[in-house]
Every structure is written in C-alpha cells, then in structure tokens.
Image 1: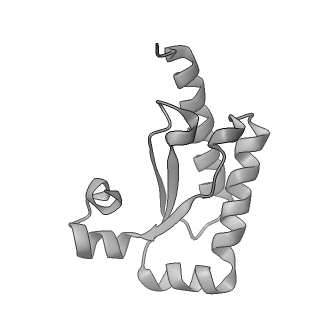
Image 2: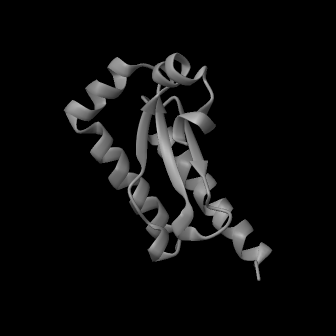
Length: 109
C-alpha cells in the first residue's frame, strides 16, 4: 500500500535538494528528476548544462564530482532514506535537443 504522505515528504526533499544544488552551482541550467515519488531508491536526478562543451569542461575540471558530492550531502542533511542516496547524472540541453527534439523522457528512456 502506498503512503501518500511519505511520498509527498520524499518529493519535497528531492525538490529542495535540486534547488539548493542549482543555486550553489551557477553552471547548471536545470535539474530533472524521475521516480522519487514511488520509492526512494527508484529516483534519479540529472543536472543539465546548456551545451555539450560546458558539460565536457565540467567533467574535466572535476565540477561534476563536486556537484555530485554536494547533491548527496543535501539529501543526507534532509534525512532522505539512505537506500535512495546515490549519484546524480549529468546531461546537456544541446544533446537532448539534437538527439531527441528536446524531449527528456526519451533522452532518459
């Protein structure tokens, strides 16, 4: 049986975490999440850079590792269930636009 109150609480934790990360790192254009409303270990969050070049630069410089670490810290700080705390992913809007017409559902499918 689903616990809607708990699902709402998990959703709020993920939303606040994503907002914190986006505000802490100016290079992130947006954040996308899937699955957190069902079970904590089913979700994932992806932070989106505007261009392929920005994403590659972030990977080479270690920025993506910093973002991932900060993301995990925010989930821990807000008491997200430990089984659901995992690494985030990264993508570029440019690639999604080019390969999937800007449709993130198909990008991640």
